[in-house]
Image (cartoon, rainbow, N blue to C red):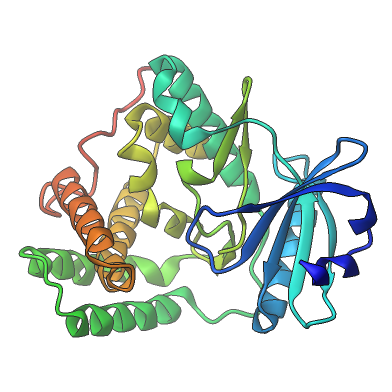
Length: 299
């Protein structure tokens, strides 16, 4: 805690509360100063400097666009070499815990908001990246390698891998943009009628539709929200290619999630196996790219 004194506003802080939530290795703190202003402080290891600097710079751009995100306030290095960023605190409730308490039409409405904000974020272009098909093929190869080495096997792995192989050619034509990197109900805050997006710490460049690789974290909670997000993103008819690619990204994420979960113990592995089953079922054994919960809007 002593190193926090390096931050300019530290003398005015009257409350510093460690936040023990999420999967990030960063340290996060809730801050309240003597004037009642509230902040989120994130501290990262020195090797994450460039990643966190880019994240902060893009958050500045997104906030300047008028989108519902935290206001970036300060970024720098502590004397011990660690990286810090200070942003405004977003008041409200975690969307993932309150969404199902709302009427279906309100769940759908918040999904519309999420999709429209996501579309605006994706207007930020990517720079100095190799072609997406090449990049993502390298990721698939690594995912396969780690999955096979993990010793954790799915009974339907051949169907998943077969679907990926049959649809991988769709990657070649994809343009890349800035991505939030973890865009689902776990990273939204609801305040009254408004939805806010938080936690850009996994942001990157890539196919904007890859953001739907973890969409299960939304649709397993609220299919109304998920339907709203897709409609808010496309504002009209959804192209078949989107469904084929979002299913592909979900398939890759299923395989990637199991070795990742193994480092957190048997409970985490069991949790991801359950989600793998849900993904497999919603795509009907990966025989149909349109998920079972998707509803074509009337009119």
